[in-house]
Image (cartoon, rainbow, N blue to C red):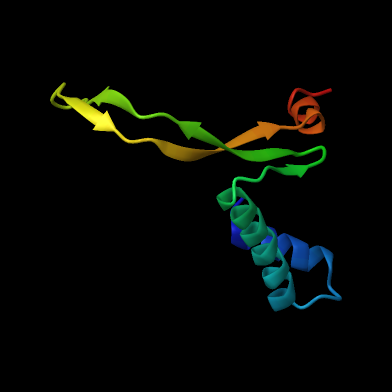
Length: 93
């Protein structure tokens, strides 16, 4: 499902809301999650999962095409851990 499909589904299920309002709500939720993660905060949506940021240390990697050693800088990457309810639904429990 992509963002526009999510917005359309929510708008269809809530006919009392304008589609532009639903779009604004969805965009606000995503922006808040992004801003919290940018600050290094953890975002937990009970039953769904938790978003956090993990730090990857600087390392020496290899260029797969040439085999040449390449220095990879330290970076922060998003991480998502599924919640118990989501895991159970995916596994048919």
